[in-house]
Image (tube, rainbow, N blue to C red):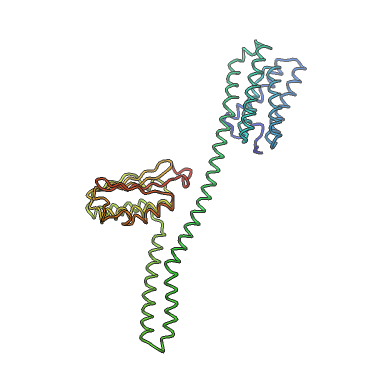
Length: 375
């Protein structure tokens, strides 16, 4: 159990002042209503109960259940001897903080059973006393039934949320690692071959300078041309690596559609959706590619763009009234394959419909990227 608990629980669902009243009330009723011997017995039982309650928060493993059982026995004694059942709420609160499922349900069931049995027995022992307290007894029984289960459910949910946050952090680390690997592969594919070629041609040119100056000059020109191509590819790679804001891309899309004289309708405010950077970058590139296809190939007069974010996914839908995809406009072409590869990297999907135009629906799950406070 957590070591920071005390007799008065930290941040309980019931006000701290109510807990204090429950602590003071048994002393008040016992001193006021009973004989000296009964007062001594009652005070000893109350002190034993609070000591047991304190030790139960400090104990671990099986000792926890021993102290809870001791509290239940003291609750029964207080109920039968003095008609005071309200300390059972302290035990109920503690049981609600038990993490072990089997231990919780055993203690939960035993506590409800012993509390009800002791109350029923109390009505036979002192009917007048228990009848006068019936409304408070009902409230206490309701608390004994509901409080542990409510706290247990809340703690279980918090544990699951903590595990989910840990899993998200791990997945984010893996995503970063995969992105670094992708960048390394792109750099190797982009520069590796060309730098090797430049090295080989440089060696060849140095050997041909004296033997065949014209051939050496041609090799130098080839080196320069290869270097220019490599520089261009590196610039394109860096441009793809830059984070692209979706709302900025939508502004550019509006300008493109307006210039192409295509009527457009855009639903959803990307700036207010708080989309994770990686997903936003992929969606921006997919939107750019999709609108490029609409302008260049569809012959559309109208285009509708819809961006929605639900609890578990983001959906980007582009619909146009053009000619759609046919044999000339192969679905595997026109940049759609690149879109699918980007979406696969973030577990997204691309759905294409070809009815009275074209409909591209891009869905990206948020199960591994949703952060608290993003909604």
